[in-house]
Image: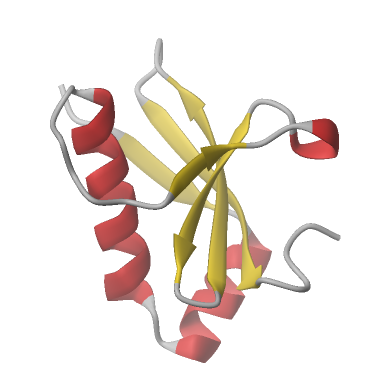
Length: 88
């Protein structure tokens, strides 16, 4: 069964403006490989505080914040932005 990836309007807008669809999809693909047990090189972090329960992928100066539902096999990309703005 495949994973379903959805994006918030805000995330889609930023990805379109920066033209980084390939990078974001690659990061999510690496995350899926990691949770399947493969050893992949990805800067992944489980977030705390206001973003508890979310994960963060670092792609250069860009951060991708997303939520994972393993039961439904869904990923929801909540926010994509530059490092200084994404957590606000």
